[in-house]
Picture 1 (cartoon, rainbow, N blue to C red):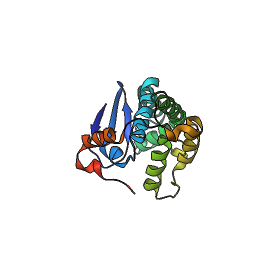
Picture 2: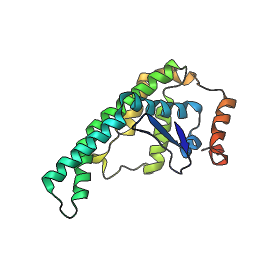
Picture 3: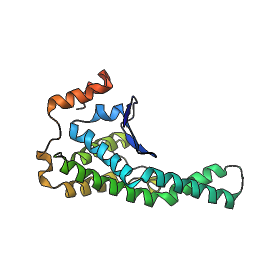
Picture 4: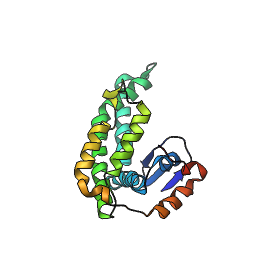
Length: 186
């Protein structure tokens, strides 16, 4: 795992069991449980080898569409669009499985698995300003409200009573990204 300074609040898993956390995710997290739950979600992708599967699938789909369409002007866009449509269902399933893995891992570690729902909702609200995206058909992730409901149901009502790190340990962790990570969101 590594942390990269970036203005986008996100984290992602790459082939080869690498996880990248962007510094703004740590800055936006209101608790260690939120940051840990996102990391646990990405570890769920690593455990299932989702990044590698996605890369292989995208490469194969793009190759097949290239063969069918030939080297036409604009074919790259058509291939990318076709790949997005074909892989959207797979990605949604992978996201749901990674969410479930995160909640389970957080619970076993003594943390609040429902914190994943909290940070996902806050980031999605800010990203879309509360409005629906026109390209929802091509979404690779399930709708945030559906994810949040499933996460909270799995975590259970007692989840909010658990905490993975003390306040002092959370402050120290946030300091890893420098002054930008110390701002608190309202």
